[in-house]
Length: 507
Image (cartoon, rainbow, N blue to C red; front, side, top):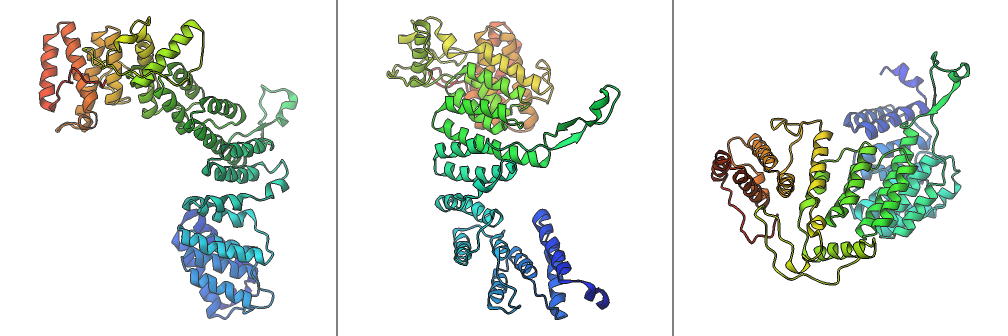
C-alpha cells in the first residue's frame, strides 16, 4: 500500500477493515483472515497512526482473542481503562463482548476468568446484552456449570421483546429452557416453551409470478416462504426445545405426555421431528412390545418425510419377535387379560407377579411360553407378531426402492438381528421357502462384506447367527431339500458356526 493511499483512510475505514477480517475468521475459520488483520494493525503501529476510537481497539482485542493471545488482548483493555489511547477511549459493552468471544475457552478455569470480567462489567454499570452473554452461556453449558447457566439466562430481556421478535425470543427462551432441562426441571422448561409459542411466527413472503392460470388480481398474491433464514431459525430453536422436553418425558416413562408434545409439535411448526427424536419413541415402545404404537410411529415418519434408518427398522422388526424377560411377559399377559375381560388400556401397569419357571425353545430358536400361563387363549399372538414383522420388513425394502426378491441388490442390506427375526416370523407362518430366501440373502451380504475371511458380523452377533443357520437347516429339511441342507452345513464349517444350545434362551 502506497503512502498517499494509506493517509486517505479514516479511522472508521481502518476499523471496518479489521472487523471484516475478524468476521471472516468467525464464518470461515481461516487463519489468513487473522494474519491480514494483524498486518493492518502492524502498519498502523509502524506508521504511528493515532486512532482515538474505542471501536478500533475493540477489534484489536477480538483479533488477539481469536489468535489465542489473551495477554495482549487484556493489555489493550488495561491501556484503554488507563487512558493511554485518549480520555474518550474507554471500555464499553463491545470491549467486554470482544473478550467473551474467546473461541479457545473450553475449561472451567477459562469460564472463571471470563466471569471475573463479567462481574467487572456489572460493577461499572454496563448492562449486558444478549450478544455478550451468548459465549458465556455456551461455555457454561459445555463445562456443566448449570447454576451459572441458569443465572445468566434469568434475564428480563425477553419481556422487553415484542411479539414480532420471534427468532430472537426463540433463541433466548430455548437457551433458558435448556438450562432448566440440564437441572431436570421439566415443568419450568415447558413453561418456557409455552411462552415461546405466544410469539408470532416470522412471515417472509415472495410475490407469485403472473401466469395465465391466475385471475387478474392474483399477480400481487404473496405466499409465505417455509425455509428462509428467519423462519428456519425460529422453527429450529422451537423444535430443539420440543424434543429436549420430550426426551425427558420418555426417560421418566411419561409416554403420554411425550406423545402429546409430539402431536402438538407436528401441528405447530413446519419442520418435522428429527430422526433421533422418533428413535426415542421407537426404542421406548419396542422395549415394551407395543406393536400398535410402533405402527403409528412408522406412519408418522413416512408422513413427515423422515426415512427410518437401520436402527429404527431393527427395533421395528425385532420387537415383533423377541422374547421378553419374565416380568415383561407377565405384564403383557396381565394387560391382555384386562383388555379381554374389562377393556382396560392401562399399558403402563407394573407387574406384581414374577415368572421363575425355566423356559424351553422351539426348533426355530423361539422360546416356549412358560407353562403356567399357556392357558390364556392365543398367547403367541400376545408375545409374537410375525405378520407385523414381515410388514415392517417389506416396508424397509420399499423405502430403499429395492426388490425384496432380488438377492443381488445392494440397496437394502439387513443386519443379522433383522434377518434372525424375519426368519423366525416366516418359520411361525410356515413359509420355509421364504426362510431359505432370507438365509441366502444373509450369506450373500456377509460374503460381500468379507469375501476372503470370516465376516465380522459373526463375531458381533454369535447367537443370532447360530439361530439363522438352525432355522435355515430346519427349513431345508421341511421341504426335503438335501442339497440345500448340505450347503448350509458346509457354510457352517467354513465360518465355524455352532448350532445353538437346545436350552438357550436367546432368539
